[in-house]
Image (tube, rainbow, N blue to C red; front, side, top):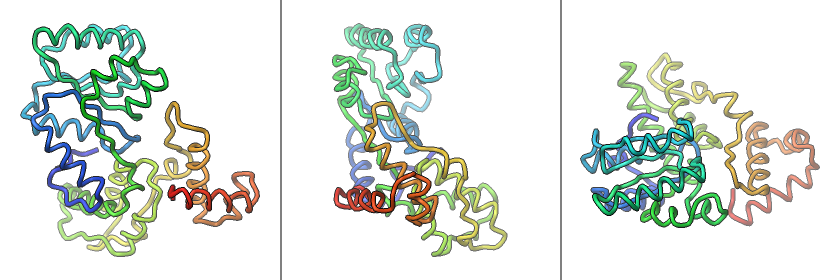
Length: 286
């Protein structure tokens, strides 16, 4: 995800407006915070902006738990010469390394208090509740919690991000006169967005490259086939009912809401599919 001016964004949804206010209230960052959300929601971007707005552009250590070998975590941590640490994908932290991190924070706090920003797909409270995260570490890491929404939950800001990335790529590709048609925006706003903001960014860039005129139409909005049909945004600990809901909704998207085709693909009756859809509507899940 490209660096986004999160404080300059003209958000429409109450969710993002509240996020802006919360983040502004904790700057400059001096407390441990966790930023959690699904893949592609911008966890790393929010973390980096918080650090930059705190005047720490180059004065922090970054460790991606998912990318380093477990046995090297302690060495990476001890090699950090700054107070501020960005610890990405903390939900992948092995129990032994959780103990190392807890001890590190406790020991360093006796000298110069470290400030740890963590990112994760799931909230630390959920992980602690299920025994996947040490309870003492949960309290150390979650002074503040920032929950990022899936893009489909803030549909009014699909336009916000679409227009932002259009401006970015229009400049990058020297196409300053480009605009989005109403039909193109409607197509963007109706999509399921499994990959969230990151996927939207790719779709808008693709549209800029495909458009030969000055107006991007709906025919220029092309979704990634692999992401659209073959990828579900799943994470460890997700309930079976939630997996089922996501699969049903994505299959309906794939069939353009043709319930007969969707039911056939899913191997269920149309009646069962209709009942599931009504159940989701009553629960406010769609």
